[in-house]
Length: 158
Image 1 (cartoon, rainbow, N blue to C red):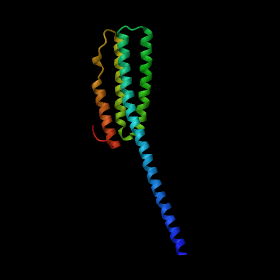
Image 2: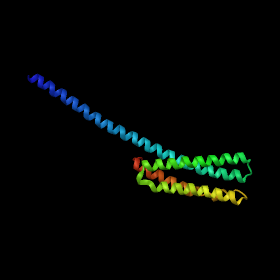
Image 3: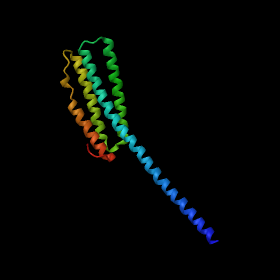
Image 4: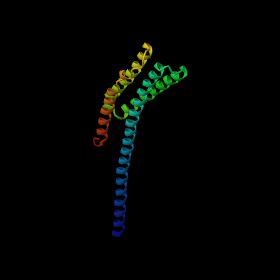
């Protein structure tokens, strides 16, 4: 009878040990997947915001450069859809980084600023002035956002 109890105890400990290992590895796996999604949101928001701002810059340049109407309309549509994608990616970023929502507001302000500068230039006519687009403040916002997000993800400073 004692050999049976020893075998039962050994089997129970083995089963319990594998269960604890499985629970721990599942939790770590879920955490890694979540961190990968957060990193993807960070990379996507940066790319989409830069793309949208660049599209507004390009639209204003093509209109004031005298490009054909169909080219200008196409670039304006692309700028609008790029802005929509950027707004979606900002919202996604805010979902994964709720403590950094102020960066989302800053990025939205930058997008609106680029759009309004482009609209003002096209409305006023004349010569294209790329200096009116403040890419430095956009880069400052994006760099601060990336630095804070990397810190939350536990990545070292660049």
